Image (cartoon, rainbow, N blue to C red; front, top):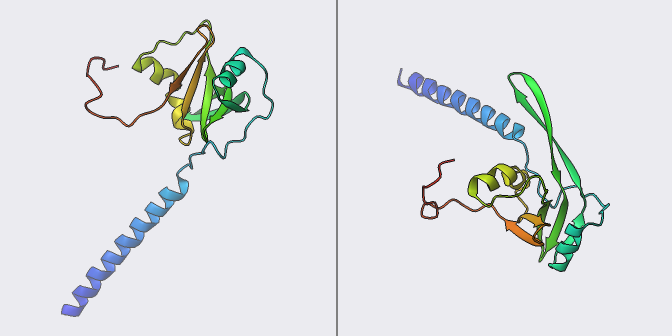
Length: 161
C-alpha cells in the first residue's frame, strides 16, 4: 500500500511539472523579441538638412535616414494602427542613437513628464540604442536623452505625474 501512494504523488508531481513546462514554453515562444538597433533596417537615403549638418559638426556619423515604424494595438478586440517616425540614426564611438529633430510648433519642455511622454516609446522600442539625440534647430543644440535605472535617492517626490 505504501508504494501506491509514492507512485500517485510522483505521478501528480510529474503532471504538474509537465503542465508548468508547457505553459512556460508557450509563453516564452510567444514573447516578442526586441529588435536591437544593430538589426534595424536602415534607410540608406539621407536627406541633407540643418540637423544633419549639426550632427556631423558634433562628431556624429549619420548612418540612416528618415524611417517610419508601423505599430498595431489591440483594444477591446479591435485593432488600432499608428506609427512612430525616426528622423535619423546616428553613431559615435560605436554607440548608436535614434535622432529626433525639433518642431517649431511643438517645443520640448525639459521636464521628466514631458520627456517621458515624447520619447519613452523610442527608447523602449530599441533597447540596444545608447539613447536618443534631440536636435534643437532653434538653439543649434543637441540634447542626449538616455533612459536611466531608477534610484530611490534620485527622485525627489515633488511631481507625481
